[in-house]
Every structure is written in C-alpha cells, then in structure tokens.
Image 1 (spheres, helix red, strand yellow):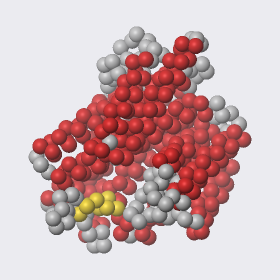
Image 2 (spheres, one colour):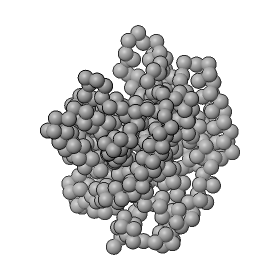
Image 3 (cartoon, helix red, strand yellow):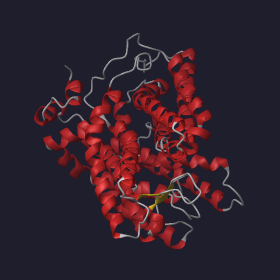
Image 4 (tube, one colour):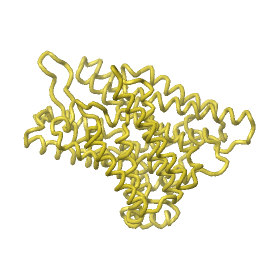
Length: 456
C-alpha cells in the first residue's frame, strides 16, 4: 500500500510520516493552508444568526452577528484569513512548476484534484434541493439554494489565480514583487472608486477586483517560495501596511469589517476592496516573518501527522462544513436552542456549544467523505501531459485549455454569487469549460490513479 493510502486510512504513525517527509517539503505551506480553513470554519459558525420566518413569510431570516454587534467587526481582522490559503497555494504551485511546463495543462492537472470533490458535492446539494422541493419546504429550498453553493466562490477565484501563477512564477526579484503588488493594489483601488461613485449598481467590470485583490497573496506566496523577501523586512512591511489599513478605516470610506455585513457602503469582501487587499498583504508578510517558527513547530511528528492528514482532505473540510453546520443549527432549532436573539447570554452559549460540536463532528464527517476527494474519477482524472513539444498546434491547444479552465473558474464564482436557481446557467458554463478542457488536453494514455505524494 502507498504512503498516501496509509495516511488516508490513518495507518501510518507520526514518526514514520515525519521520517518519510524529511526536509524536502515546506511544511509551513501546509500549516497555513489547514489553519486558514479551520479559522474560516469556526468563523462561519460563530457569526451566523438564524431566525424563524416572520409572520406570513416562509423563508428563514439569515443574519450575521457582526450586524447586531458592530464592535465585534474588528475581530474579522483576525478571522478573515483566506488570503493565507491563496498565499500557500501559490507557494505550493511554484514548488511544483518545472521549466518547460505547459501552463494550460499544468493548470488543468491542478483543477482535476480541486474539482473532483466539487462534482460529488454538487450532486449531493442538488439532491437535497430536489428533496426539499418535493417536500414543499420553501424555507429549506431557499437556504439550500442560497447557502448550499455560496462557498464555491472561493474555488472559482482560486482557479483564476492559479492561472495567473503559471505566468507570475517568472518573478525573480524583490523589485518585481513590489511592482506586481502595487499594480494589483492600484487596480483594486480603481475598482473601489468606480463602486463609490456609481449612481446605481456598481459597474460589472468592478468584479475584476476578485482577480486583482486575490492575486496579491499569490504574488507574495511566489516571493516566499523563492525567498525574495527577508523575514525582518516582511515584519516591518506588515506593520507599515497595517497602519495604512487603519488609516483607510479611520479617514476613508471603508468599514472596519473584513466580511460583508448589512448596511455597508462598500463591501470589503464581495467584490474585494483595497482594504481587503491591504489586509492580505499584512497577513502574508506576517506569514513570511513567522515562517521559521512555524516550520519548527511543524517539525514535531504528531503536529505534522495532523497537518498532513488535514491537507489530504482540505477541500472536503471546506465544502462540507457549512451543510454540517446547517444540520446542527436546524436540529438545535427543533430542540428549542435557537440563534435568533444575539443580545442574550443564552445565544453565546448556544453558539459556543454548536461551534464545538461542529469541530468535533467534522472529524468523522471528513473521514467518511474524504475518499471522494482522494480517489480519482474515471475519465476525469486520466493523467494529462504537462510538458508538450513546442509546436504551434500544441501552443494553441495549451492556450485553449488554460482559457477553458479560467472560464470554468469565473463561471463557478458567478454561480456561487447567484445561487443554485438563478445561477444554474453559470453552472452549465462552468461544467462545459471544465469538460472542454479535459477533452482537448493531451493525455498520457494512463488511467486515473492515486497520486504518489502524501499530501497535495
């Protein structure tokens, strides 16, 4: 049995895994990737409020604790850590890229692993929506349609950023890093200005800040992987950028919350604002500054065992934590433990218990569902070439593969924004893009097989 299989089944002990990993893997990347997801999971549970339908209504009222307690919005500067996932993903991509790699085919190989659990998840959520519709439960239909696919925005954005990484990985100097970050930051600021001065809805093109803002942590991830920024410099830069962010809140048009809350003049999250872009810079520079300490901590065999196991099921954890949270909250409401009165002491107790229950139940849930993430699918996971001969035909084919994966990513992001019902056309576009990329990519004439690395 391979190391991958043993780890997936928990049949390799911590000391053996530590020995097999050795010093060849950057464990900091894996720690940041898993830690950022766990913080996101806990944050979603703590912040969500749910109230029964109002008189005459048939939809649950979903809210955010931050809207009821504005003083807590500053906590999002600690809880909004998704930039670290983009940072870690870009660094891991740089480690995996080799000279002569065809960017489109490399991107599709990455998307095979990323989208594999998404296909299963969409089937399950679609079945749940169908069941709720059959049972004539408008409240359930509404929640599933809205929240069931909301988190997929991240995967759509991530695919687009990985496409950029395929080209940005040519960055080789600190100066190039600074120029690239400033360019993305400036373009995000232009998008903010357009949103602020729009008479009606913001121009559609301002959605491009999803690319410009989230590219910043990717650039810094590349810089980290290539050791282009010294830890001391990173620490000083993080403090300076933190001061800039504080100034934007104190003297500019930005609200303090790093996630969307009702009543915001300008959302910092959807689409990302220049404040979120600055926050990403702070987090990523702090990660670079603290990388040495994180690496020493991750050298502990037991710590590394959990980090490795968690990374093997990272997408399962991300995708399924919100449905599991919904089941916990729904069960609590049936038993009389509701989240509809944030001002009460009982609310804090209910949220605390349910968050702890979520983290505990995620362990068996992820163990049960992680095979869907780690077992390759026939046809979809047939191995594709990543190095092609330099002919005009292959260059055109590779560019087409890259474009189709980007289309799939953008459409997935828009599908997540619109929900399962209104966004169904975007889902069709996303699936068509992914399938099209698979059809025209060059294969190795090998069937799908388990990846050889312990974690990906």
